[in-house]
Length: 276
Ligand SMILES: C[S@@+](CC[C@H](N)C(=O)[O-])C[C@H]1O[C@@H](n2cnc3c(N)ncnc32)[C@H](O)[C@@H]1O
Image (tube, rainbow, N blue to C red; front, side):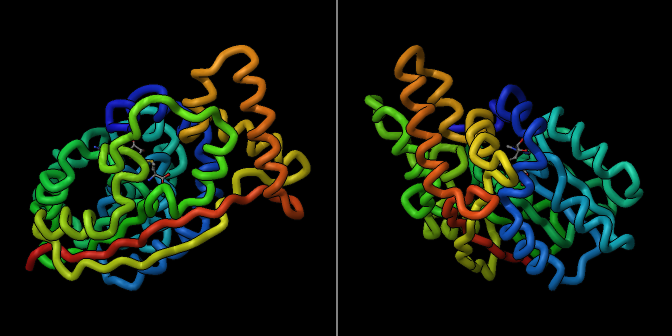
């Protein structure tokens, strides 16, 4: 599980250092999210869990008349986002919990976006109800989230390199990257929180994790910094660690085509509207 408190520390720090590779890994998701978001007319945007700010920057850059606010709990990630946004006068960032964020007078968003930033709330119904209350009536919500672990080939591939866990199975609904994998659960959360016209679009894509001459080395170093394998491998020692690293390299080599290492990934693009 990764909750919002982990994002304020080590996890946020690793993501802040790896933002370029992370943006690259999300490319097909970002393109589709932006296409869906741009199909709506908007004047004020909230980017929930904006991280290093790729969505916020893209929307602020191509719609100078709109005001964009990125909200995130990680100081490190907002530090990167602020540098990227330094030339954009219509983009600002707010440090804090999106579940408690309040829009200023006349600042209620009519478009709310998020790339994988909404799965970490302790109480997602309360969070989405609060966010709906801050939005304009009839505001559009567009976010991405991973589908379930079993549908994400990259998770299976990484797991095959690790020693089998002997602890209890993780709660699939605990805050973390896969908490919104179950479509029915997400539909229930959003409708209980008052959101309407809820839609789901599945996206299956190749997640590029290494590229160029040293694509396998790059992918290996990425997974040692970010995601479920990083934590599992860091907890191993001695020969177990060496064996896991060798198996992980083997997995990445098996997915090396041309100049890239890519693994299969699956997410939802979820859309909804706040109550009118
Ligand atoms: C998987 S990352 C995605 C970051 C960014 N949207 C991107 O696509 O690169 C999840 C983000 O959600 C943020 N986050 C987690 N819980 C949050 C909360 N309660 N309020 C605001 N941001 C939160 C994290 O700090 C992190 O930046």
